[in-house]
Figure 1 (cartoon, one colour):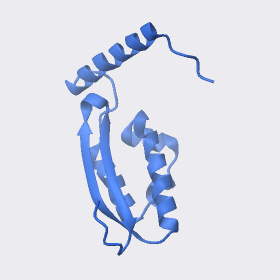
Figure 2 (tube, one colour):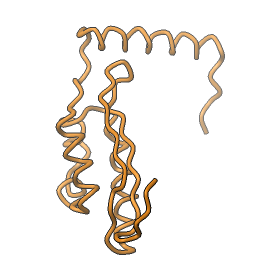
Figure 3 (tube, rainbow, N blue to C red):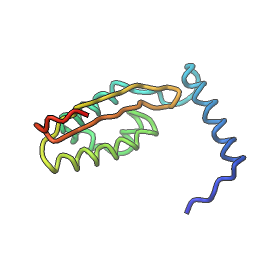
Figure 4 (tube, rainbow, N blue to C red):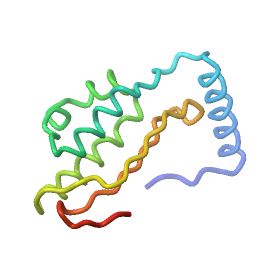
Length: 120
């Protein structure tokens, strides 16, 4: 079980994170740069159902390509793989924006069964 983080410790951690994000957004810092081309290629794979190229990779590949926060992509893989079990799908809405201040690319998609004619 995780230990409760005292308010002062949480505040100090948040302040360090905000300072690091500002430095990164300004071009400083030793953090892995964002990789929007990789993010877009991943979103394309989700839309087409061609997930194998990403699913077959070890965790180290994700870190090399997209940094330490790329672990979230594996949840997207699981969700789109589960969707694929129910048949073809189509992505009706897709948004992506690299946000250096958050150390991340931010993406959202909406997918529905193919031919459903649903617009989100």
